[in-house]
Image (cartoon, rainbow, N blue to C red):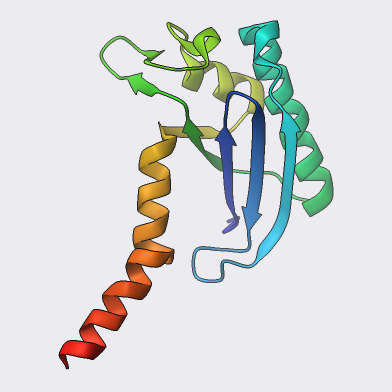
Length: 138
């Protein structure tokens, strides 16, 4: 079983991907960034994501079993489509289904701001300051 962690930050101007060795060993194996070119439409954005993933596969000599996407909006589970995206080409689209068909792996999405907050809590300044407070109070 592949323990690597694959993540994509899907933005309005860029798409950035990272592959980490594992959740227990967050060594960066690959980090790539390309322009989104969102003004060219939804299908073009999907194609750009595929290009990026293919580059990452080539660099790591591996393929993802699951990819997490930070998205500029949210996926409405009830409607099965993206909503509230500032990258308007994504609104009303079943991004998860389309990505899973295109990339041939499981896809999970979450709002990019929520992803940022979680990362800061787990690995960033919040974790550092919590440790400092605990040491101070001890």
